[in-house]
Length: 325
Figure: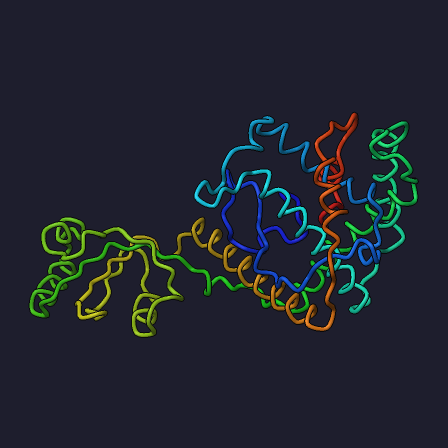
């Protein structure tokens, strides 16, 4: 689902970038609606399901549902939605339990805010609704309170357990690069560069690699190359370096590509958080198996395509300043 608790959990591709699959969360995690492990009745489970379904339909039109995400495997967008919905409930179960284990709770002001949004949803969508028949305001409150709690738990657990990404770890530098197999030629080219000749022209004429302009994630390079390049300023020229049997010359175009470094820092951050969360899940479920009742889940999926008269669950949160902390 677009508004999963662990958005960015995996880099799994989804049509038009509309979802994050979580199949690699251990399949031991399942939800037993019959034993009330989730703690929700049918109408409560329907709140996020119909909300996300409506957002997708409004964004891409109803024709999206039968579009193929993977034609070879016969997987449609509808199949993907059902998979994401199931994983949404998995995440909810696990993060609720983790919040208890780590003594993470909502403040009174946070509870008040969640219940205010719940009342809006209830007044606009539930009263006199056949689809949510039997749902009380208190049950609706629980769905909103849980959503805020698990987002808070996720944030606090990550802050406590995941190392921040430094600028040096994420640094991206831009270079013009010449690669040759002959050391004497490399020496001659280095002298010509130091005498002010144009690096791109020399690379076009002599380099054995047509990839001349490169953005390099410095932290991923071998230590000798990282050390030599890391000290270069704009316009600086490296000594002759070797890698995979080639003699390589680098001319620094930009010693720190700030925009690229910023994006790379966010990518590393997301990967680091994803690894932590997946490991946390796998460890947790070893001693906390949860079963699923497919009948109840399929019932939610089947009845999640009606139109809400008011604002949906996720839109209410997205418009709230405190919805994602």
